Image 1 (cartoon, helix red, strand yellow):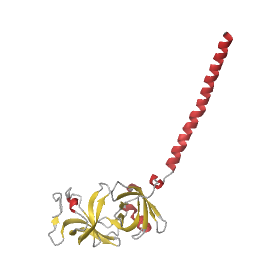
Image 2 (image 1 turned 180 degrees about the horizontal axis):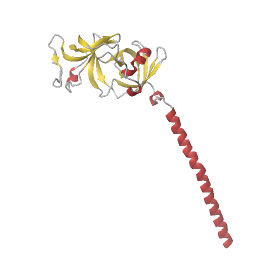
Image 3 (image 1 turned 30 degrees about the vertical axis):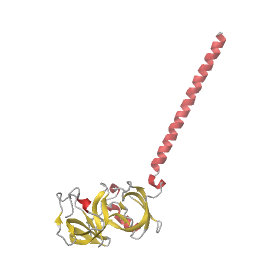
Image 4 (image 1 turned 90 degrees about the vertical axis):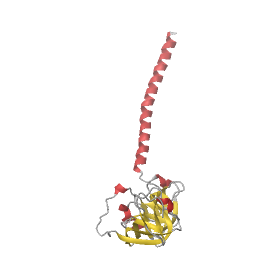
Length: 238
């Protein structure tokens, strides 16, 4: 009996020691594997959207413009709109021009014309732009920039332009080529009055450059009618 107990205890001790030895080797191996995975992910700077099909595929109609004349993104012929920080405008206009065929990787809210681009590929010549964040680049110099002037525009609304942050209408593209932006203090529901094929006249301040014509509206009205000064009290087009 005593011999049997000693044998059993010996086997138990051996099992415990084997278990301890096994765990001291397995745990570091698991930790190393996890560390390698994290390192691999952090070293891979490619956006995840590149692992999926493009969310837009079409022809560039024109550049989206700030009233100061800064290039801020692209408008495709199907109405898709994507904003790129004006700090990257130099790279954007160098790689992509109106008429080019592009594929866009990124995100897009359901049934929205607004695209949040990560990478824009110029299918025409194979070049691509990885879209930087606003803070990745310095503020572009103001030297040589045209000052805004009093402007007037008249035409049919072709496309509704959207605020990329609010995903709400904040302007229109007219048939005369002018991009009209609404002032930030406009009435909350005014944009509901703006619909494609509506003919309007606009006054405001803006610029005209080699990339297009853009203004921020100060007054607006239906073609042939009086213009209404825009402020927070204006809730609909008169």
